[in-house]
Image (tube, rainbow, N blue to C red):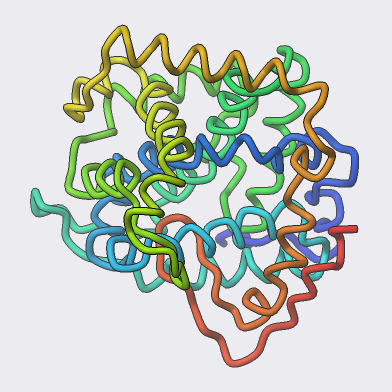
Amino acid sequence: MASPVFPPPEEIPSLLPRPGSIVWTHAGDARLLATAGYALLLQVAHPTVGAGVVEHSNFKEDPWGRLLRTLDYTYAMVYGGPDLAPEVGRRVRQMHKQITGVTPDGQRYHALEPEAYAWVHATLAEAIVSGHRMFGRRMGSPEVERFWAAWRANGRLVGVRARDLPPRWSAFRTYFEHMVDARLQDNEAVHDVLGALGQPPAPPGWRLGEHAWRALSAPAVRVVSLATVGLLPARLRERFGAPWTARHELELRATAALSRTATPILPRALRNVGPGYLRWRAAAIGRGGFASPAVRGSRPAEARARAGAGAR
Protein backbone atom coordinates (compact mmCIF):
# COMPACT_ATOMS: atom_id res chain seq x y z
CA MET A 1 0.00 0.00 0.00
CA ALA A 2 1.42 3.37 -1.02
CA SER A 3 2.29 5.77 1.76
CA PRO A 4 0.41 9.10 1.90
CA VAL A 5 1.99 11.94 -0.08
CA PHE A 6 1.31 14.55 2.58
CA PRO A 7 2.04 14.37 6.31
CA PRO A 8 -0.84 13.88 8.76
CA PRO A 9 -2.26 17.09 10.29
CA GLU A 10 -0.68 16.46 13.68
CA GLU A 11 2.79 16.41 12.09
CA ILE A 12 2.46 19.68 10.18
CA PRO A 13 3.56 22.04 13.00
CA SER A 14 6.90 20.23 13.28
CA LEU A 15 7.56 20.78 9.55
CA LEU A 16 6.99 24.53 9.61
CA PRO A 17 9.87 26.96 10.16
CA ARG A 18 9.39 28.74 13.46
CA PRO A 19 10.18 32.43 14.04
CA GLY A 20 13.87 32.70 14.81
CA SER A 21 14.70 29.30 13.29
CA ILE A 22 17.49 29.00 10.77
CA VAL A 23 15.16 28.76 7.76
CA TRP A 24 13.00 31.60 9.03
CA THR A 25 15.96 33.94 9.47
CA HIS A 26 17.82 33.02 6.28
CA ALA A 27 15.18 32.46 3.59
CA GLY A 28 13.87 36.01 3.47
CA ASP A 29 17.05 38.07 3.06
CA ALA A 30 16.35 40.61 0.31
CA ARG A 31 19.79 40.02 -1.19
CA LEU A 32 18.72 36.50 -2.13
CA LEU A 33 16.59 38.00 -4.90
CA ALA A 34 19.86 38.20 -6.81
CA THR A 35 20.06 34.39 -6.78
CA ALA A 36 16.50 33.74 -7.96
CA GLY A 37 17.70 33.41 -11.55
CA TYR A 38 20.37 30.93 -10.51
CA ALA A 39 17.76 28.68 -8.89
CA LEU A 40 15.44 28.98 -11.88
CA LEU A 41 18.23 28.15 -14.31
CA LEU A 42 19.14 25.01 -12.36
CA GLN A 43 15.49 24.01 -12.34
CA VAL A 44 14.73 24.44 -16.04
CA ALA A 45 17.95 22.68 -17.02
CA HIS A 46 16.34 19.47 -15.81
CA PRO A 47 14.75 17.99 -18.95
CA THR A 48 11.37 17.42 -17.32
CA VAL A 49 11.16 20.86 -15.74
CA GLY A 50 12.46 22.57 -18.86
CA ALA A 51 9.93 20.86 -21.11
CA GLY A 52 7.13 21.65 -18.67
CA VAL A 53 8.08 25.32 -18.57
CA VAL A 54 8.22 25.61 -22.37
CA GLU A 55 4.88 23.84 -22.91
CA HIS A 56 2.88 24.92 -19.87
CA SER A 57 4.37 28.08 -18.33
CA ASN A 58 3.69 31.71 -19.25
CA PHE A 59 7.21 32.80 -18.27
CA LYS A 60 7.99 34.55 -21.56
CA GLU A 61 4.63 36.34 -21.75
CA ASP A 62 4.49 37.41 -18.10
CA PRO A 63 7.89 37.25 -16.39
CA TRP A 64 6.89 39.68 -13.63
CA GLY A 65 3.73 37.78 -12.79
CA ARG A 66 5.81 34.62 -12.86
CA LEU A 67 8.28 36.11 -10.37
CA LEU A 68 5.56 37.30 -8.01
CA ARG A 69 3.74 33.98 -8.04
CA THR A 70 7.01 32.15 -7.38
CA LEU A 71 7.74 34.43 -4.43
CA ASP A 72 4.18 33.90 -3.22
CA TYR A 73 4.83 30.18 -3.19
CA THR A 74 8.29 30.30 -1.59
CA TYR A 75 7.43 32.77 1.16
CA ALA A 76 4.11 31.09 1.89
CA MET A 77 5.85 27.77 2.46
CA VAL A 78 8.32 29.35 4.89
CA TYR A 79 6.33 32.12 6.58
CA GLY A 80 2.71 31.19 5.90
CA GLY A 81 2.06 29.30 9.12
CA PRO A 82 -0.12 26.23 9.70
CA ASP A 83 -3.07 27.52 7.64
CA LEU A 84 -1.42 28.88 4.51
CA ALA A 85 1.67 26.71 4.02
CA PRO A 86 -0.05 23.29 3.87
CA GLU A 87 -2.76 24.71 1.63
CA VAL A 88 -0.24 26.15 -0.81
CA GLY A 89 1.64 22.85 -0.79
CA ARG A 90 -1.45 20.86 -1.71
CA ARG A 91 -2.46 23.26 -4.46
CA VAL A 92 0.99 23.30 -5.99
CA ARG A 93 1.10 19.53 -6.13
CA GLN A 94 -2.40 19.46 -7.60
CA MET A 95 -1.33 21.90 -10.33
CA HIS A 96 1.61 19.68 -11.21
CA LYS A 97 -0.72 16.77 -11.96
CA GLN A 98 -1.71 18.37 -15.26
CA ILE A 99 1.84 19.11 -16.42
CA THR A 100 2.58 16.32 -18.89
CA GLY A 101 3.98 16.07 -22.38
CA VAL A 102 6.87 14.92 -24.52
CA THR A 103 10.42 16.28 -24.34
CA PRO A 104 12.17 17.43 -27.55
CA ASP A 105 13.99 14.08 -27.71
CA GLY A 106 10.71 12.17 -27.63
CA GLN A 107 10.59 11.11 -23.97
CA ARG A 108 7.28 11.37 -22.14
CA TYR A 109 7.42 13.44 -18.96
CA HIS A 110 5.25 14.26 -15.98
CA ALA A 111 5.95 17.10 -13.55
CA LEU A 112 5.37 14.79 -10.59
CA GLU A 113 8.29 12.55 -11.48
CA PRO A 114 9.97 12.26 -8.07
CA GLU A 115 13.42 13.25 -9.29
CA ALA A 116 12.27 16.42 -11.08
CA TYR A 117 9.79 17.41 -8.38
CA ALA A 118 12.36 17.07 -5.60
CA TRP A 119 15.05 18.80 -7.67
CA VAL A 120 13.02 22.03 -7.78
CA HIS A 121 12.80 22.05 -3.98
CA ALA A 122 16.50 21.25 -3.68
CA THR A 123 17.59 24.10 -5.96
CA LEU A 124 15.91 26.65 -3.72
CA ALA A 125 18.01 25.47 -0.79
CA GLU A 126 21.15 25.56 -2.94
CA ALA A 127 20.36 29.15 -4.00
CA ILE A 128 19.80 30.26 -0.40
CA VAL A 129 23.00 28.69 0.91
CA SER A 130 25.07 29.95 -2.03
CA GLY A 131 23.39 33.35 -1.88
CA HIS A 132 24.36 33.88 1.74
CA ARG A 133 27.89 32.70 1.04
CA MET A 134 28.21 35.16 -1.83
CA PHE A 135 26.19 38.19 -0.72
CA GLY A 136 25.58 37.86 3.02
CA ARG A 137 26.95 35.88 5.94
CA ARG A 138 28.24 32.43 5.12
CA MET A 139 26.58 29.70 7.13
CA GLY A 140 28.99 27.35 8.90
CA SER A 141 28.78 23.61 8.28
CA PRO A 142 26.58 22.88 11.34
CA GLU A 143 24.24 25.72 10.34
CA VAL A 144 23.96 24.43 6.79
CA GLU A 145 23.18 20.93 8.07
CA ARG A 146 20.40 22.32 10.28
CA PHE A 147 19.11 24.48 7.45
CA TRP A 148 19.00 21.53 5.06
CA ALA A 149 17.27 19.26 7.57
CA ALA A 150 14.55 21.86 8.11
CA TRP A 151 14.24 22.67 4.39
CA ARG A 152 13.95 19.00 3.52
CA ALA A 153 11.25 18.58 6.19
CA ASN A 154 9.34 21.60 4.87
CA GLY A 155 9.32 19.98 1.43
CA ARG A 156 6.97 17.32 2.73
CA LEU A 157 4.25 19.99 2.84
CA VAL A 158 4.43 20.21 -0.95
CA GLY A 159 4.65 16.43 -1.37
CA VAL A 160 8.42 16.00 -1.72
CA ARG A 161 9.18 12.61 -0.22
CA ALA A 162 12.01 12.40 2.29
CA ARG A 163 13.64 9.55 0.37
CA ASP A 164 13.94 11.65 -2.79
CA LEU A 165 16.50 13.99 -1.27
CA PRO A 166 19.74 13.19 0.59
CA PRO A 167 19.44 13.23 4.38
CA ARG A 168 22.51 15.41 5.00
CA TRP A 169 24.06 18.41 3.27
CA SER A 170 27.34 16.58 2.89
CA ALA A 171 25.46 14.03 0.78
CA PHE A 172 23.60 16.85 -0.97
CA ARG A 173 26.85 18.01 -2.54
CA THR A 174 27.35 14.58 -4.14
CA TYR A 175 23.71 14.59 -5.27
CA PHE A 176 24.10 18.09 -6.73
CA GLU A 177 27.25 17.19 -8.65
CA HIS A 178 25.55 14.08 -10.04
CA MET A 179 22.58 16.13 -11.25
CA VAL A 180 24.90 18.65 -12.91
CA ASP A 181 26.95 15.94 -14.63
CA ALA A 182 24.25 13.43 -15.57
CA ARG A 183 20.87 15.17 -15.77
CA LEU A 184 21.02 18.90 -16.48
CA GLN A 185 20.85 19.87 -20.14
CA ASP A 186 20.99 22.88 -22.40
CA ASN A 187 17.45 23.50 -23.68
CA GLU A 188 15.01 26.15 -24.86
CA ALA A 189 13.88 27.06 -21.36
CA VAL A 190 17.48 27.73 -20.28
CA HIS A 191 17.89 30.30 -23.03
CA ASP A 192 14.48 31.83 -22.32
CA VAL A 193 15.57 32.41 -18.72
CA LEU A 194 18.96 33.81 -19.70
CA GLY A 195 17.31 36.16 -22.19
CA ALA A 196 14.64 37.37 -19.80
CA LEU A 197 17.12 38.03 -17.00
CA GLY A 198 19.52 39.84 -19.29
CA GLN A 199 16.92 42.25 -20.62
CA PRO A 200 13.72 42.15 -18.53
CA PRO A 201 10.74 44.17 -19.73
CA ALA A 202 9.33 46.98 -17.63
CA PRO A 203 6.88 45.74 -14.99
CA PRO A 204 3.13 46.22 -15.51
CA GLY A 205 2.05 49.74 -14.61
CA TRP A 206 5.41 51.33 -15.33
CA ARG A 207 4.69 54.83 -16.65
CA LEU A 208 8.09 56.46 -17.09
CA GLY A 209 8.91 54.93 -20.45
CA GLU A 210 11.25 52.24 -21.70
CA HIS A 211 14.41 54.36 -21.59
CA ALA A 212 13.84 55.30 -17.96
CA TRP A 213 13.24 51.66 -17.09
CA ARG A 214 16.46 50.57 -18.76
CA ALA A 215 18.47 53.22 -16.97
CA LEU A 216 16.98 52.75 -13.51
CA SER A 217 16.93 48.95 -13.59
CA ALA A 218 20.40 48.49 -15.07
CA PRO A 219 22.33 48.06 -11.77
CA ALA A 220 19.94 45.46 -10.37
CA VAL A 221 19.70 43.64 -13.70
CA ARG A 222 23.47 43.49 -13.86
CA VAL A 223 23.79 42.00 -10.38
CA VAL A 224 21.12 39.36 -11.10
CA SER A 225 22.74 38.45 -14.42
CA LEU A 226 26.18 38.13 -12.83
CA ALA A 227 24.87 36.00 -9.97
CA THR A 228 22.78 33.79 -12.26
CA VAL A 229 25.71 32.84 -14.45
CA GLY A 230 28.54 33.26 -11.97
CA LEU A 231 27.14 30.85 -9.38
CA LEU A 232 26.82 28.08 -11.96
CA PRO A 233 29.50 25.39 -12.05
CA ALA A 234 31.91 26.25 -14.87
CA ARG A 235 30.92 23.14 -16.85
CA LEU A 236 27.27 24.26 -16.84
CA ARG A 237 28.21 27.72 -18.09
CA GLU A 238 30.07 26.05 -20.93
CA ARG A 239 27.18 23.67 -21.61
CA PHE A 240 24.72 26.56 -21.79
CA GLY A 241 27.02 28.74 -23.88
CA ALA A 242 26.83 31.47 -21.22
CA PRO A 243 29.79 33.87 -21.59
CA TRP A 244 31.94 34.28 -18.48
CA THR A 245 35.24 36.10 -18.37
CA ALA A 246 37.77 37.15 -15.75
CA ARG A 247 36.17 40.59 -15.86
CA HIS A 248 32.75 39.09 -15.06
CA GLU A 249 34.27 37.18 -12.16
CA LEU A 250 35.98 40.28 -10.79
CA GLU A 251 32.77 42.32 -11.09
CA LEU A 252 30.72 39.69 -9.29
CA ARG A 253 33.26 39.33 -6.49
CA ALA A 254 33.48 43.10 -6.00
CA THR A 255 29.70 43.46 -5.89
CA ALA A 256 29.38 40.54 -3.50
CA ALA A 257 32.09 41.90 -1.21
CA LEU A 258 30.27 45.23 -0.98
CA SER A 259 27.04 43.41 -0.15
CA ARG A 260 28.73 41.34 2.57
CA THR A 261 30.28 44.45 4.07
CA ALA A 262 26.82 46.00 4.40
CA THR A 263 25.48 43.07 6.44
CA PRO A 264 25.86 44.70 9.91
CA ILE A 265 23.98 47.82 8.80
CA LEU A 266 21.35 46.11 6.63
CA PRO A 267 17.91 47.39 7.74
CA ARG A 268 15.79 44.87 9.62
CA ALA A 269 13.12 45.07 6.92
CA LEU A 270 15.63 43.87 4.31
CA ARG A 271 17.10 41.10 6.46
CA ASN A 272 13.79 39.28 6.22
CA VAL A 273 11.28 40.50 3.65
CA GLY A 274 9.18 37.33 3.76
CA PRO A 275 6.57 38.22 6.41
CA GLY A 276 6.08 41.73 5.04
CA TYR A 277 5.86 40.40 1.50
CA LEU A 278 3.06 38.02 2.49
CA ARG A 279 1.09 40.85 4.08
CA TRP A 280 1.54 42.93 0.91
CA ARG A 281 0.44 40.06 -1.33
CA ALA A 282 -2.36 38.80 0.93
CA ALA A 283 -5.15 39.64 -1.51
CA ALA A 284 -3.45 38.05 -4.52
CA ILE A 285 -2.54 34.94 -2.55
CA GLY A 286 -6.07 34.80 -1.24
CA ARG A 287 -7.30 34.63 -4.83
CA GLY A 288 -5.09 31.61 -5.35
CA GLY A 289 -2.79 33.15 -7.95
CA PHE A 290 0.39 31.44 -6.83
CA ALA A 291 2.52 28.66 -8.21
CA SER A 292 5.78 26.85 -7.85
CA PRO A 293 8.63 27.82 -10.15
CA ALA A 294 7.58 25.35 -12.85
CA VAL A 295 3.86 25.87 -13.43
CA ARG A 296 1.31 28.57 -14.13
CA GLY A 297 -0.66 30.15 -11.32
CA SER A 298 -3.95 28.55 -10.39
CA ARG A 299 -7.27 30.24 -9.77
CA PRO A 300 -9.24 28.06 -7.35
CA ALA A 301 -12.76 29.12 -6.49
CA GLU A 302 -11.98 29.85 -2.87
CA ALA A 303 -8.88 30.31 -0.75
CA ARG A 304 -8.49 30.26 3.00
CA ALA A 305 -5.15 32.02 2.81
CA ARG A 306 -4.40 34.34 5.69
CA ALA A 307 -1.02 35.70 4.76
CA GLY A 308 -0.54 37.46 8.07
CA ALA A 309 -0.95 34.25 10.05
CA GLY A 310 2.40 32.84 10.98
CA ALA A 311 4.12 35.88 9.47
CA ARG A 312 4.06 38.00 12.61
